[in-house]
Length: 596
Ligand code: GCB
Image (cartoon, rainbow, N blue to C red; front, side):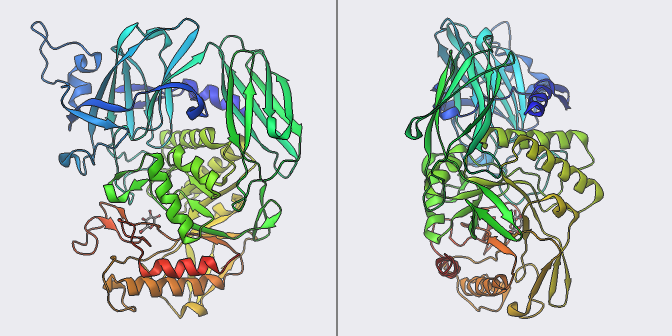
């Protein structure tokens, strides 16, 4: 836990260089944002499209919010009739921004009435990808990374009355970024998730971790962290339903360990039990529904609450396919999760990045186990120190936000990275950081390299030495043909660890019919047979702990160029973008229905 504090202090002062500006990284954010006292800053924001990023270089007055008048003329303007919806990606809101990857400026004027003894924070659930934030003409900070929250305190710069917020948001792919240049989804830019003005007391409960201790089923452990000037306080953790009231005292850094014994009802997919937990300090109080469960492995089995569990999974992107936009509402989350339930799933891989909190929280109440990953995706520059720092920061932010979600059973550090000495040592260090922050969960990575010899497929990657679970993306039958009949394929692994097929899939256009033995037919029949063949093969893997089709629903991708069958859609969905079931959906549904 001490190490976490050191990591936190480091991230507070971390400074990295980008283009001509100096990036002061956002503060560590407070957790459990839905329960904070807040005003939503969602709604209409004025915008300016800046394709060559001239604003930051030439028009200082733009972000300083200097009015354009007789004395001062600049060749730009925010106009009240030109607005974008926040949250929401900009690409889907204006036809001219369809595949746009550059800067958009955002502006909102808000009215604030200052309150004595209260602190104020601007809190962004996520902005893709780079954000520079200006408040009342001053730069208050920056953030890099499109899928995790960040906040800035504005208490001292707030005025009674009108205050202006200006953001430069740039979603240009970065060679040194996380993710880097190549990825198979639309790079939806903009203020893609909720924005909030959060009010706290002078000293408030900033962060806490409350979970079952690793390997124990009746010891609750964790910590609490206060933020403010009255750091040493008595804090109680109450779980009224279980008649728990545990009191601790924070030290002069606002930190205290939590540890008490209690046997609680355990969360599981069939009984997603959550307890109301109330945390009360002398100056603040917050509550949250938290579940308790154990997760471990035993040989090649995944063990939930002491019992082996097969993960009936599915992948999906944070995309509202039918709307052709980022998904960002609770209803969007409900829609995807209901579709996964209908397929018979008990497990979700939120694909390649942390999705919004609606997805994670709703999944937990609906009884899904989750795999959550940072976008360390192919093509990452493992030789660049700044890139590695950034990956680490995204990992820290993901764990910080979601560590109290018992539904998350697996943290993943990467997807399909090319094995090399540097890559492996960087990923191993990410696995280590992950375990320092949270040793209660399993750690994995989706790898995609195996050795093929005739009918034998051998799993081998040095990274696996440090993983709890092997994630394997394989596209046998789609990108690679079947070397022998599916039932003849033999998977071998020298690791005594469970395997999750983290991806497998084939393309079909909904409503398009054709032969079932020709991948180029793009037909539902081909995809249906592909699924039958994959299931035949997977059933023969003795160390298989779960599987995850790629994907639940067709998603947009600028990489998918077939004008007739794809038209910038990845068609590996079991459902069309409108949610219609392809034939393969029924195959998967039947398979999941046959597993207890
Ligand atoms: C993969 C990637 C995923 C792609 C998928 C595909 O291995 O992890 O992001 O969308 O393959 O469809 O090729």
